[in-house]
Length: 339
Image 1 (cartoon, rainbow, N blue to C red):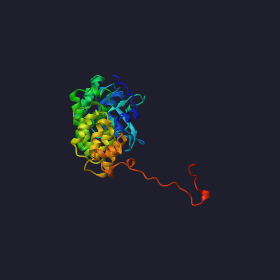
Image 2 (cartoon, rainbow, N blue to C red; image 1 turned 90 degrees about the horizontal axis):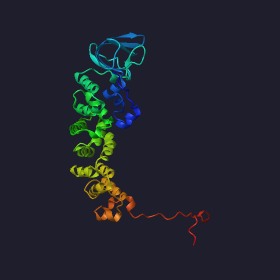
Image 3 (cartoon, one colour; image 1 turned 90 degrees about the vertical axis):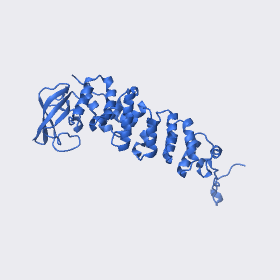
Image 4 (cartoon, helix red, strand yellow; image 1 turned 120 degrees about the horizontal axis):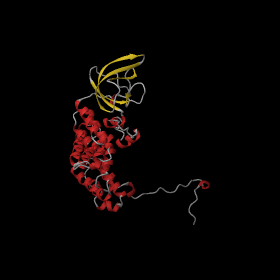
């Protein structure tokens, strides 16, 4: 069986996944399945050194996909540990899954540089690959969602990254949506999952209760690297749904204002008004009042709803303009208006 090669370029993956996880997203189990000529379950026998290169010998246990030319194969790379190398830390006698590129006339090579194309063959990882290989492509989205609960960290993490690239995430059944929300909730607690991918997938399939999870995290958490992603995700939800989640969490200065600024004016204005007149810090009240002024509220309107004069945006305060500069030397004086 010839596995179709992926047409996804690294740049496209970075746009789909975001900066966090983009490098791993190019070498997920799903991406490697699409790229490899053959996927082999093999046992590592040992290595020899030829000059400055390491040669690792493998015995084929079974071919999961594609075809191989013999019952054994050898992979080579420059000796030593370095980025993009996979053979230095192998365990003799252990079983691995090799994603092979067999286009070279002499010997096969890994379909991607680095150890991600040569993972340990845990039973769960092998079952995951077999399920993908035996399933039609349209079923992969559902399988990735189910694998978010896997015990094997490679399977679980790659499933989240693979799921974020699927074009039909919005059509996930309720069980798949629940799995996405559960994975996001766990990931936000321990910050070990590919959160950018999970947040984006959540925004696309919008499981019930997910807006509340995102709002609660944004208002109360301290993960500034994820803020932009969460705010962008909240923009995909109905504004009324997001607005209904905000009052259920204590105001935390400008973070609540940031949410209200991003949703539609008719839903965000009441939140901004409540913050502008609330008993929270001055900077948050001023920011909320400024946001209201940008939405058409005049200084008089702000004062009528209870905004303190000290919290009015600068543009709403009377301005005193300095007198026009005139030189004490009449020859240098700026000409005044014609009379």
